Length: 94
Length: 139
Length: 157
Image 1: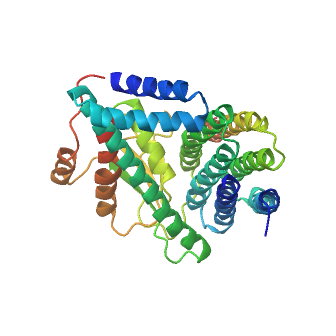
Image 2 (image 1 turned 120 degrees about the vertical axis):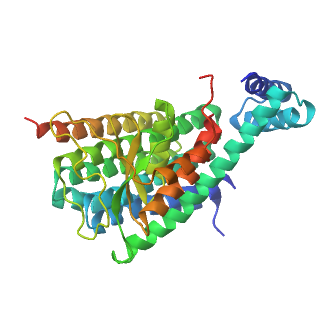
Image 3 (image 1 turned 90 degrees about the vertical axis):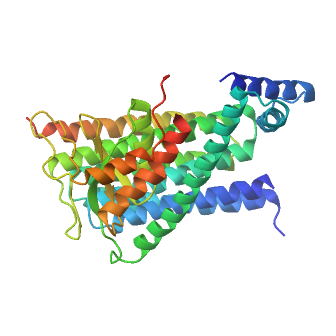
């Protein structure tokens, strides 16, 4: 019979493994992606994965302050993606 | 009990993220990749932060987690729209199995303006429009 | 709008009476306040508020259902190679007028797997979306008009 604490340790390890796998797969797309927008999408997914890792870390180590870090992370991903999209669109007109 | 719900939500969220990455790798063209990547990752991250909210159950943490969820659900589709628009504009090719492309030729390459489409079946469109609720007077 | 304030006030009162200001207790207070408003007071203002809440609830239920069904379909098409896919870009005439309506509709379409909104025309009459499983273009258009847009406008207007 698993205690509650052990259950949570087990799941956080499992979830961290899954998220690292996610990051590696998106990294392959980031390297291989035939066009620039493909790479931007892969970068966007890596950013979301980092936010997810922060959430798991906040639960696994009982550190609720990391939720604030996740807010900043979400903001940075959004602004970065928007900037990249503008860059992709404007670059061709020159 | 909260631990079980939290574990369930975390594993579900991570599963969706993994699915997004697999989709990103396997889909044939950019738009299908975005279909697979953006919304499954939104759902995954949202579910994981819901797990954090359930785990702590404290007002400050719950409100901040809900803030992150609301922010993700508002911004990730917007950034997807920005990338898709830019990609279509610079001419990223669609997959050869694509059935229709009604956006073709609608962009003005100099002013970046987008024409609306005129529908041949005006009758059908009127029928659809009439089934919608009327526009309210007060805004 | 007044009924919503009243509902929040009832939730706060519940939290004050029980003496616990946690999120869980405030949610319980909000639900109890909603039930009180549902059964105790039936003036026209409240009736429209309750109807709106019920419509919002059914809309969220519809949306979550769509999300689940479409996610499973998406997972299936990700795992099996791309034989079932029939992607394409289609135009949808918009009945939504204001910025908020168009933004919400585009976001909801983007969040449903299988459809992704690409752009709105400059005169705001057409929404272009990319869809993964197109059996028939007109059927697809009709489904989005009567499914998503009608329900969303019912909630907002």
